[in-house]
Image (cartoon, rainbow over all chains, first blue to last red; front, side, top):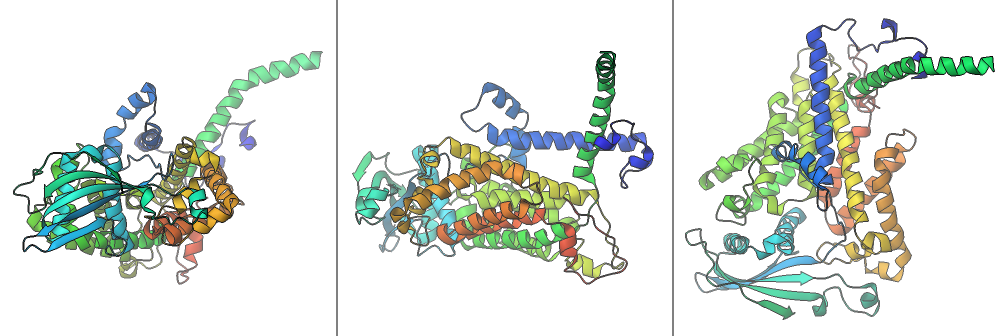
Length: 212
Length: 320
């Protein structure tokens, strides 16, 4: 950069890739490319910067990028294991098939869901229950129907299990990571798990359960 | 005194001119950073890796397609259809889910081997983003990374090398340098910088990343772990060190990765971290796809050495 401090840039100083005398429309093209690039880069940073908590200024800036980021599936916070690694949220189910055969299990299921990516897909479904989806009756009913497709069950009782991580002291004292004291349960009720004809839950929301 | 006045006079009068020349230089350097033509080999190699991961991920969706992608499953469209988040799956009737899925797999396979890349590279992005937008409750970092890789690769002629298209091309060896290769490479690099910066900043909001217990909390999460890491409880300082190092590395990535001498170390630490996530937390797909993205920092000339030397091939400058 210091090379040209004392003299204006000459044609000889131009990079090899630059055309000698770009036409006006070429210049306009480059200007448009740079503007689009700037918009993309700003949007890229504004998206995660607007994850709560954020200022009204950030939010108003985000309003200009929301549609763009959402359309391109770029609207992410990148909050991996942040702000703190939290407890796991699982879903316990129990019910019957049409022929009366009992069905029971937990998703995700480390042994039943293979390969590991399929396990993680199921794990993400239940991890959402730790957020607003945990209160959504529609989502609970949808989980029951999805489980119905997987298990063949006609009706399922669902229970959210929250599994906190063990403290260092607990592990040192010899408690296993799956110690029953590390689980908390919340019954969601019984849901129709059959085909879509009757998607409504059969029972109202159940009250919170105790420790498991 | 006279000399001093002259110096100040010259400096003040010369300042605007210096600002202009500096500005022009900076603009030219910025333009070259994003648009100086480069060879396609880095992106072509990345296309194979990322395409393979997209193919695998999509194939795994197919193992329970009806449960994940029909209205009678986990995610009915009226529950997950966010305005402005397009997905081809919102237009696919439940009865057509399987045939469309197989077509998507075929398109991704063609993309990975570099066949019809001018079309399949855009299809790959549409497919990866469509699966993710249709099943948002079951997505995680893998889908985010795979999607932006597909998007940026689509901007470049990523099928120009290491591909069926290249084999079938009549004019062997005539690989043109293109600005589109550079901009796609730069976008991947800069996107990684943004990603790690915000991943690090988000961690600063949490107590566990300050008191050093975050790695323990992650490692002791029974649902994630695939290897027993409870031994960390016996040597807590290791957990503390890894916790602080993770934050420091993420927050400094954007600055250090541009230094050629530091880059190998920065990327080696990142590779260790992501492969560790794969080995110990079972998220091989996420760990690998992050590591694949690092190849954007490898100059095309490194990959050109993998090709059979061709006297007619154009020279390719480094992208960094």
